Length: 301
Length: 335
Image (tube, rainbow over all chains, first blue to last red; front, side):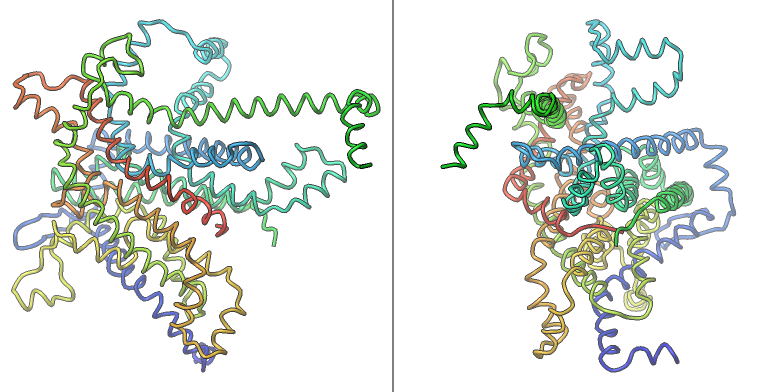
């Protein structure tokens, strides 16, 4: 009753038109998101049989999940691999895009051109094109063979050898070098993130830096005291976007396995179980990390 | 007069001024110079990193097969040929796919942006019960990977039925698989490719429009719909253009939804994914070479195919670059 009272007269009319405006979303959300979501959750507990008359679900309990974790030879390995690749790459993408945004925010000749080039990957690395490029595993092996036989030693290779043989934190170095070798992957995945960071950087007013420098702040200090806190809300946005984007990428082996199970083997129950495991893991990673990040976020207004 | 003279004196006495500032000026000038060089080198390197694969693809696509194995040929083909393009066009049935892709991308993008604009506007400018809950649902739509529900959507449209109407009329559920209708339905219901993101961006834009503008329109006798069409939409052109461009481009290259819902139409993205297999089959069946196509030549054909898919997008990007970039930076995405 109280709630009713809140929306009277014009407010009530506006509330109704508000609902009319978002009604496509509500209908679509219920029909194409909620229903399939619960259906696929139910299917993951079932043995799904498809026949010309329709679908028959026979409840089998957790056996699909048990099959995924204990029987299937690939699933555990793929899950761990994809998740760790996602985490490492996402961190690298965040650092890279923030760094590039900082540089692109400065004034120099040809800035428009450089920005256009950095934004190009949003178009060029979307959808199927990425998958086609990484598909060429065979070619890559041929290339690496050629490289080995030609015996070219680059600066980074030599540095790598020196650092790894020095024995300090060999594992950590390996991860770093993997990222450096995959800098192209990082660069082409960070187009949108750069734009978002740039938009944040441009909203910081110059007077703030001026005041800081008059008070005796060095550039390094004003970066940590002004720039970093002011764009910190965007770290959250970008982090979530990066992870979600990574899930959608077409070179994700786990997703490939799932759709193969679904389309080629018509094993809907097993495919649903695997995708639910993946979904829950991703969602919990997003939830936990955004909680951690949002603790450190600073809101100016 | 005095200003010019002062400037001249300042210019001439760099060392004097340097002396006055106890070496600070020289140090700063050198520092700035080195910084600029380093930045230019870094930027050039990174731009090259991004552009190099495209340039490489362009040069490879004009090579004959023997050029690929010739160690002397690196980027400029010795035997210039356009045969690769003809072959690839044949494998991908390029003309038909291009027209299909164009039609599908255009219509889907239009539909998606129209609906997203309505929904985004509703979220930004109206107060209604459960608004926070519904907006949380939008965030959920952005976050849920579509692969999770792909299994049941697959079946959902195989035995499509709205509250059992079709079953009552014709005796069996509708098989919508292989027709384009499901995907258009989903796009109309904001569940298409990245629809949640567009809603979010458009809502962010409409929220920044001052309330006075809206109230003035109401006072002058505009209804809700008229205010939206006459006052709000003209303002929102940049963000709508940018969302439209994104939607168009992402739809153009999308393989996931196309493979699932648009199975019967030949689209560029789908053709590109199988062009290597087609090539192999062609070599075995037509040229009667039992081993299939060589790795290098397959790669060459795939590169050519990729180029042919992205060239229309590149042209679009050249003309509409501002539309892509600037409106996002102006909308101020925040959480």
